Image (cartoon, rainbow, N blue to C red):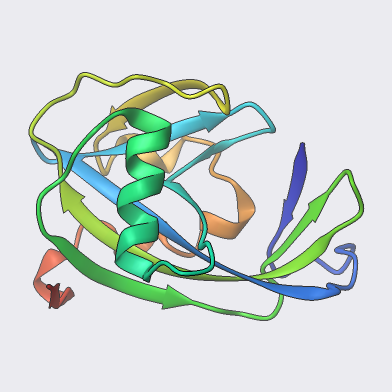
Length: 153
């Protein structure tokens, strides 16, 4: 279990950096969010492992968490505000740096990982009332503006 913070004066002080990816996976104009077992809804993503690129990390996390394969990745943004904190029960407190991609899924058929309660595709209007994990809230306003995303090969 983890607790997520963003611009929260009650957040613990981080002890190390965390670099990871999140991917906004779209299908028919809606974006996939994962209802995490440790709390709210969020984009699909996780920590980058030694020896992999950010793109490899994104594709690995997508496959592990959803069973989906996606096409081209587009860079949605880099989110590195120093108050993006993840605190794990085991004691690790991380300042989270997230590279966010966007991709299109060819299917809505999802195989959930053990980390998830459920996953669903949401419209832009739906997101106004969905409780999103604190470290992903600043990403949500950028999701439906693909004209600003460069293609990553």
